[in-house]
Length: 358
Image (tube, rainbow, N blue to C red; front, top):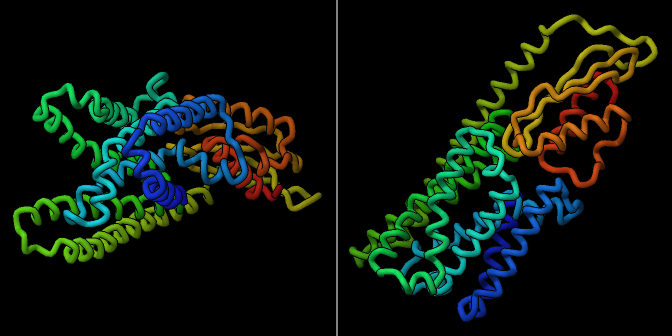
């Protein structure tokens, strides 16, 4: 799962490079800027490295898993007990970590070119608002900029981070909730994990503030008690979403049994003539593929429903055209598949299964 790999990567990075990052962060800014630029170029070209890198490393950048993980470390840095090892480790590099997180987040934003060719939606509008908040925080995190500002004004501006952090969580919900309701287990699991991470922070931060003015307050004790509470709340949210998904899929299955004319059985094989469709979740929306089967063969393939990122629809359309040339090609092994084209492949395979062709 990308969030676990990303969190582990971010933690290892801090443990390995804490001192050099504290001493001279510029080389790290350059390295992560190059990685973000490479992500933008690869995404705009519709290229996925494939293999282990394409499955586990590349998504840390394209899906902002690593950026979010660095933001999580920045968030939690101030929640630990004063004088503890975690706060000593993180507070000294909190600024550089937030800059690296912002660089990676910008790579994520522009790799999907949402601002260049917007498909106006609640997610798009929300993303623009987040970007408008993040950029001033990003710029003023640089030491040279901070030194030129009035300390009180700088601190006041940085408080907008307490608005930005909850917005990250809402942004994640907007990305994954539709897929979770559609029955995508990965989307539902992502919501569960991110809910634990962010909801616990929303409790830990006030607890830390309270402990400062109440010296006898056992911060660690109540942090762990609140974690148990958050896990149960997140689990309840997860079960609710998956329950909605099961109900929705049951309704769809029932309605599909009453659809148009009965397919004509093909005497030559188990293939059944007719029109079949399947829907899978891409990066940010559903993608529906429809096939027409006549005399046991696929005679037409269409894309009647596309609710994913519009900037990448042409890649899916090109894939559909390629499938028309060889309908029974092994589409499971197409290299360079993006999230959208992966959904097209999965939906197409499901439609073939329905027809008895796979």
